[in-house]
Length: 95
Image (cartoon, rainbow, N blue to C red; front, side, top):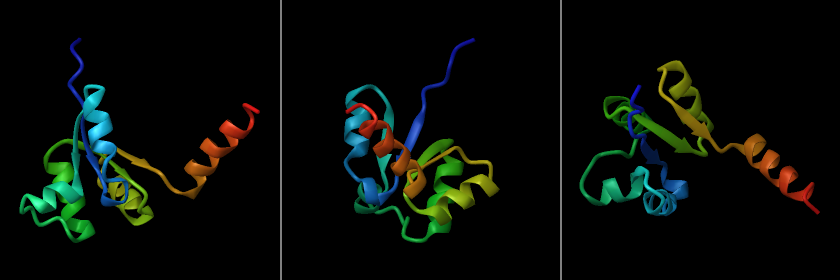
């Protein structure tokens, strides 16, 4: 079975992560850069719709977007406080 390449949409709070993901081979896009190119992605609804229509995984810190993704069966990585705390705790345990 051939695995499809992942298409990733990075929310504006993490603009720049798309560049890092591209460097290691992911097909990643930034909401901020797509807006600069003229796409109307200002409302959460537009962002969720765009991700769904383009079969993208959304990376966001916006809890409302995370909930909307779950409700609409859109893959999402929610970088909320709980997730960030897990990362911090994991790093602290390395000391």
